[in-house]
Image 1 (tube, helix red, strand yellow):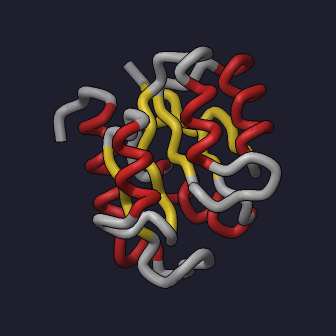
Image 2 (cartoon, helix red, strand yellow):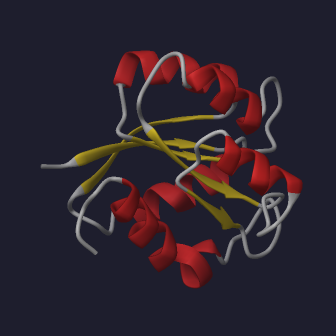
Length: 135
């Protein structure tokens, strides 16, 4: 059974890269994307994804605030993919406290064009693990 994913990042380039990474796994399907937390909450209501790949730094409503509100809307899992959520950072700790399954740091800042090469396999593996699929 295919699991559905909503990709959330304020950068069109990063959303495209993450969608390309997810498309390499036939059991994972990107059903939509969003550029900020407000848009994310609307799309979660419409699309009911199994998993969010969520950035933290976004205009309008950031990923942390989005996670706080998401709990009222959906049981979907969240994996944070962010440049500010480095291991042990306050943002990473807050995301985990709010229920993030895992936190993946972008390797080269907010616009990490090397994401697929450096973190692509991690994104797929962690997404599969979050969704209860075998690795």
